[in-house]
Image (cartoon, rainbow over all chains, first blue to last red; front, side, top):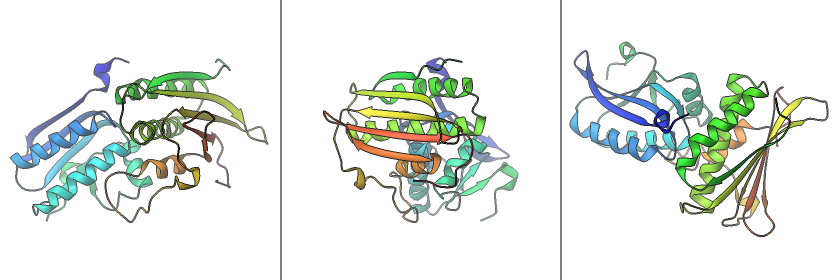
Length: 116
Length: 147
């Protein structure tokens, strides 16, 4: 598999007038720092809940989960929420193994994001 | 399907992780592990390599990591695999390697817990000549006892 296949892309787009951070690729020790930086940057340039679409993330390890914990803490410090959207079963299982599925608000679709 | 072990000679560089995952994923597929199990095997290896890079080598790149993956059988003839991860870095008392309290929610420190949760047995040894050897064993059929 080429190196490009293991690249991580992070992009903030508007969906139904809500900013959504779309993450694509694999999150591991190599790409976690990039993800953390991109999510914090996106948090600074948006308002309301930080909606993170992980549906195009095919792989995540504990580095990635740890990054999510860090970002959640930072965002909540500013009085905002973090919602994770569309986790693939393999990614969701990492949150479950580490019991962090209860720490995060996780939904399958953008329509399911709970009201504050 | 080859019965020869898969041997990987890796560098302690995070950029080596995707290729290592891919090779082990392919090996497990060839040995007829199902998709869920393959995901678990690959994640456990990734966590082991991440721990070596972070802790045994303190984030230094260019250090050697040797990985061996081989098919094994349990005493009842059930198919399994054994992954050995050998580093040449800092030695620690194997008894001091344990997963942390999951109620203490913070980034980091989850790798050992994941490795233990995804394998049927996990053993850390101080290797002769320095460094550590991690031996992970996993079987296709669920086993009642976990070490």
